[in-house]
Image 1 (tube, rainbow, N blue to C red):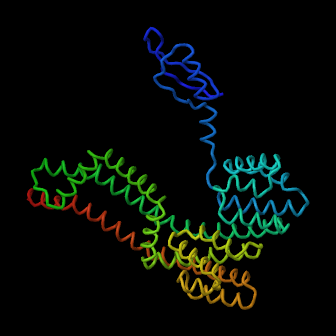
Image 2: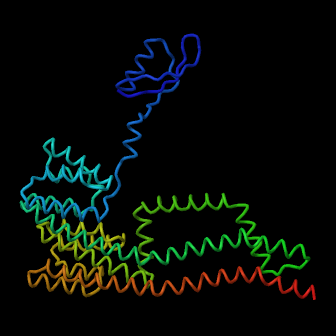
Image 3: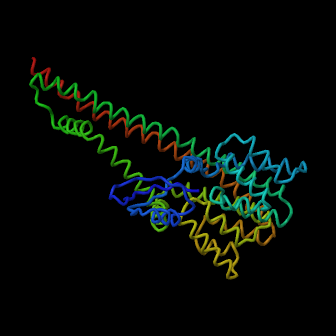
Length: 403
């Protein structure tokens, strides 16, 4: 039964608002007409349980949780526990609330006779693209515990790399936020105090001070508009980034930035190599593996280049030639893949390539942070120094006036 809110007129022309339970809107309309009501409007009302369910809808599963889940699944499957029981146990003991909801939904699917891959597919938007492919390959080969072990290693290394990137960028971000707060505090609270002092003494304010004063007044009088504009801009950009063509143009521009390009390409090469190695080793076909890998590189342009390489492979070209012709990654990647193709050890070669680029990513991050930190310190010092200069300069004029 669903609750409907109906605005109607009775036979006397009186307007009424009714709340009626019914199986469908058509049933409600039929009942109202039988009672000689003239219907103005009818709307389905959301029940509290529906609102709570929407609020509890889980988000994307974190890499740390996935790695732990796969490791625990691997251990339990080795002990002879069936998949349905494994999911039930993990749905109880998992600390992450979002993941617990997902596991409970998966457990319900398994109880109704669904396979593990079907249970995962029902929540596929919450898992990485390769996860479902790996599960399906594990079911076909009968090596689910082996697949879970490989996924645990895969997501463990991805989480480690992601953590390094986040921790490296934490200091510059904190520095930028603190400096911004200090600048706003100086302009809004300190600057007007000095200016009032100078104006009461009759000192003419320098041009720089007048500019800072106007900016200070603008911040104080229009902060609501500024905050609202910033919020709207963020929401607009977030919505815009969902458009693949816009995202492609922005990601293409990013890859023309020297320092960013070096880091991003190395990070994408590491993810590509390790993920494809895991997929191929687990028995996933190369074409399916390339399609899954294209979704995790984190750049729309690189994704499209990988899909172009996949199309070349489908037409009969080797993977190394396809990557080289599409200029996806640095030469080392397709050269190593060529060696792997010739030796028949593609998975091992890809894994070694991923290890190499993991180290390269770490070195690139350290270099980037080492460059960003002093630049930001100098930039923020210059801004704060300029504000202090605008506040202090009139003081010398005031001293000269007194003398």
